[in-house]
Length: 491
Image (tube, rainbow, N blue to C red; front, side, top):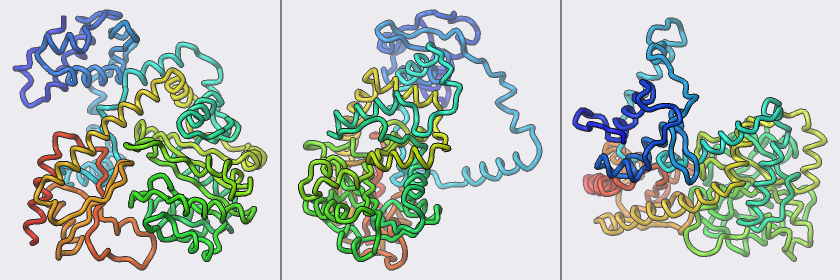
């Protein structure tokens, strides 16, 4: 059994100290190659620590290659880990030249940033919830069956096996009848948007939701396209304004709009589909970002799925909706794999005009994700994360509702997605309140920051966007207390 004297850990966390102890024993040979390690629960009981502490230490050791797991058999010491010399960890300190100076300046700037208790701005995830061991097993499975395709450039539309798995997933969970030949895999929003502009041309007018995800508008403009922001109300994007704009392509997020959280009404969906079906050059880009995290009721039908069944679309709607989604929220923002589903005629146009392109995601990553989905791990991970985020969301909302803040704010949320809105009824500006929050270690963006273009400096009442996916449950009581303290100092 592994021994670990936590009295010697000093200021180091239990998890970090346990990780270092096991790593040192592997590197020294005290733990032999192929040796079976105790289960997480067994080691936690032996050391008198939580199972979470052991799980996090194991996950890090697996991700760094010191150990691996075998389903239903346990954990084992790896035989092929790479031992990096200590000197390499300090090589940047001894290098000279502009590169190291830039690094030093960047480090200096970052170290000077205010220490935050809770970051409600960044759409991050809790890294401790990432299934490192299962993901590592998927990568090992790919490498166990080496194939020459792993060393080749990926095909323009992406690896066929992954496209098959995505098609199965969409059929089962989004009720979309999709063929793998319609799917294009890319690296993030930028690449997908580039493909869209290449299909419709720079002379087309593109509408985006306002307020909205400003990066979408920026990427359209960066590709030389004209972008028109159209206001979103309580039912979704204003379709009348879309018509008046002269746009031929509109980008929407009907299932859960960011940042307002609005769910597009049925009437507005039918109106938008009718607009698309009325002209062969009209197209809808449906962004289904974070739709996996709907906490009550049945998943909402996609526009892509509705168009193929809609009577009002006269059978043409299915050819006028492009569906897009990403794995960045369900897996990790650093895991930049996104995809879109094109109508058959546009998929054929892509193959005809863009066959020279190479998919920007490596074959190895795509193959690992394909294996991860094929063995059911992706579905299980989403279920776990959905439960985790539901509990995290409920804890945060309940804590706010039970605090004195409840007398000066209202919570606007749709039981879906990884953010909600806080509207304050206080006689101060949003920027004043935001500065006071930041002084208390809380970074919370204003809704007005997501306004695209001119015409809005600040809303009548301060409204904040609570991106809660990256915070830990433990900081919620203190974060709410600091929020309350910040508000009190201004009243």
